[in-house]
Length: 284
Image 1 (tube, rainbow, N blue to C red):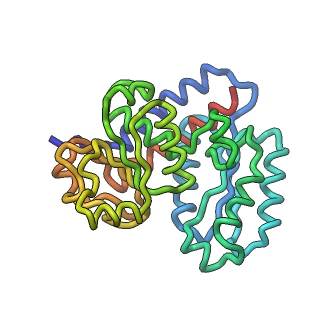
Image 2 (cartoon, rainbow, N blue to C red):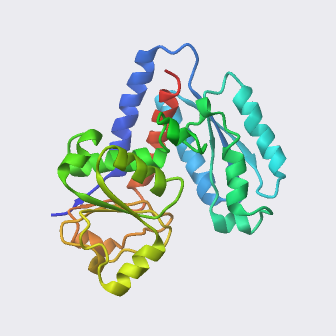
Image 3 (cartoon, rainbow, N blue to C red):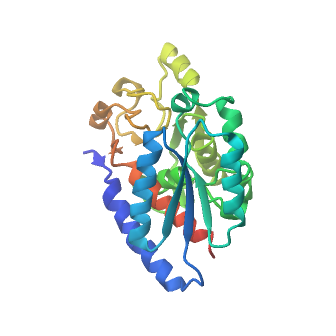
């Protein structure tokens, strides 16, 4: 029987605990997260609204400053610097637009533009682990990484530190800086058996017929709709789908999986609450 993960239910339970933790901490100033969001990217605008609603439920201030992708980079950088210096702001996030949306409007190469923006975030306010050095410091993981880890713990049972003792092979599809790379690094740090694959690696396995048949856990975050199909995975596989807005993992995989996260309603709600948990971590 397949367990279909309910991200909304689990995230709400975590919100309740976070609200209690914030009250118990008796903080001297409110947790205030400043978001920089680009209006052309509908996904970013939606996530910003959802984060603001969740933040209000747990007692966190979540405020957004909107820009256009056509705005000069220096204008956005100035807003980042101002937030760094504002003592009332405890966390800062830049919502990353999709490459396709950016390239329809932006002028600089996508990767260069993004790196310049996130490198300007003060690490003591880097609530989503976006600065290249934040992950190395080991104190804040990107919210999506933290969400996937929490779901993986639920799928396997136990705690994050016990994942490596399960003897499971974990395959991560997608080498992004926001999920694939930091997630693989964290799981390896924990001693888990992990492989990180790009779309090209997966295509090569498709030719050989190897696919992901020796993987006990498949985590996919490529943005390619229905990339993972039932013939590619083994019976009883654990799947965690980080695709958006369409699923990376075909719904038909749920017939073979022991644990399946739907899109929407799986990783997304968990990412929202994980960001707010990060905001709390930065304050104490």
